[in-house]
Amino acid sequence: MYKVRAYSAESSESDLSPVTIERRNLEDTDVQMEILYCGICHSDLHQLKNDFGVTVYPIVPGHEIVGRITKIGPKVTKFKLGDLAAVGCIVDSCGKCEYCESNLEQFCDEGAIFSFNSPDKHTGGVTFGGFSDSYVCDEKYVFHMPESLDPAAGAPLLCAGITVYSPLKHWQAGSGKKVGILGIGGLGHVAIKMAKAMGAHVVVFTSSPSKIEDAKRLGADEAVLSTDADQMNKYARGLHLILDTVSAKHDVNTYLNLLRHDGSVVLVGLPPEPLEVGAFSVVSGRRSFSGSNIGGIAETQEMLDFCAERNITAEIELIKIQEVNKAMERLEKGDVKYRFVIDMASLKYE
Ligand code: NAP
Ligand code: ZN
Ligand code: ZN
Image: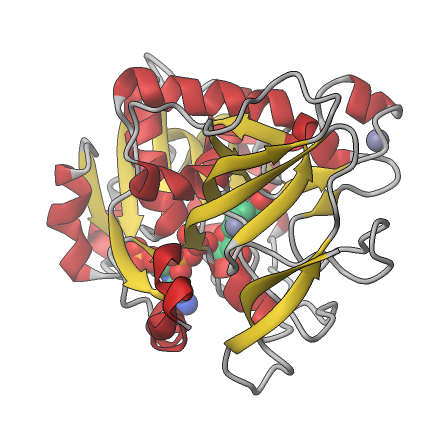
């Protein structure tokens, strides 16, 4: 084991504060990276606050990790020292179930191991995330970060990016499709860029009047204020697919009613409370209410390469780790355009 600087929280009420944690020594196919940047996802905030009732404290969040390879195990083949690399949500899985064999590690029968707050078979504790200066991971779960992308603005692709890319691809967002994006936060603003790059006609639904113009700047064809019933009525039965990225409880029936027949509302947001679906919202028009969870390892690399070809990254506010508690407060209030990313060099001054 070796010592690493990190930021952790002791309970759902505590702030994040500097600590020293331990990472495992490298095994044969492990790589070690110096973390350069780490994004702040709303899931980090949900877990810090124990919104899902499963958080193990102390918790070190962070799962949008970009860094440079600093050490490699003797059997590593994918990476060499100095490579720009990235780690996202998944850092281990059984590797042999039908899901792992189909590149759907996120649905692994034994449960995918996440980069933070998951059981860590190497240490016997829980995994500690990217709010730290170093990470160790089996190379199988590590990505080549395209050098052409800005590494700070590219970090949010590791969770926000794959979480929206995977369902947009699965539900065939593309030319001839009208795709709704619900909520313009970290996930939603990247989804606008990706759906547009896939060739879809993109309609954004936001509860924030200040984001209407921004949505168009980000590439949306149309932007709708979801609190304005007249504007909303114009889209009734008009969309093939709606990607729902909202992080809090909301009425999904409103959006199911904006679908054409056979259309789907796909939930990727994780409101902690159950959502109600009215029978007529789905039986009318044979509509579906469904969901999607991050994406597999191969698909994440595919997404990074897709973004590199089109120069798609997030719009970020780069912060120092010493500002992380303030950033969490602002994220809770929806006051970020559109992703906080921590410049991990700031941790060196602790
Ligand atoms: P975020 O940056 O906070 O964005 C969430 C957006 O939802 C806000 O910007 C806001 O958009 C909208 N919103 C928030 N509260 C609302 C309310 N009460 N009513 C209506 N709209 C509201 O969060 P994020 O990082 O994009 O994450 C979004 C959600 O996805 C979180 O729940 C996160 O945990 C989850 N997530 C899931 C996965 C997965 O694999 N399924 C992966 C990553 C994240 P407007 O201002 O435009 O209305
Ligand atoms: Zn996330
Ligand atoms: Zn598996």
